[in-house]
Image (cartoon, rainbow, N blue to C red; front, side, top):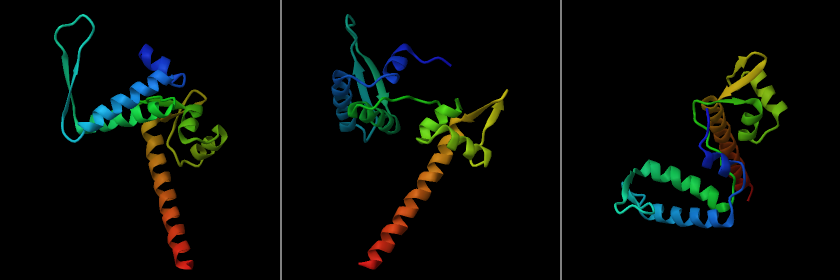
Length: 152
């Protein structure tokens, strides 16, 4: 699968100050109209008639999340849910080391397939594991906070 040239360019580096400013400005515009279906009118240089695009609330939320990261200066990579990831890519998503990820695969905590000798992880399976892990962490923190509150 190939990425568009712009996606490769922005995904391989941190956004510039101008890109951060543009992302923050666009995020504010979309946020102001995110409750219902928002209509964007784009006017390309030389065109006399704008192109109209309707953004559903779900699409608006997704774009605002992406723009929030770019506006903060984060490098962003989009991963299609059906994409197969290498172990290094999967480890990067989870923010863990590659050897630790491989131990998760060996313990069958995350489903994977073998392509030759190489393990591949479906993005969908990885994100399901991440949601479950994050939920367990959140519950553990809530339990810890409740225990702490009882001591005071």
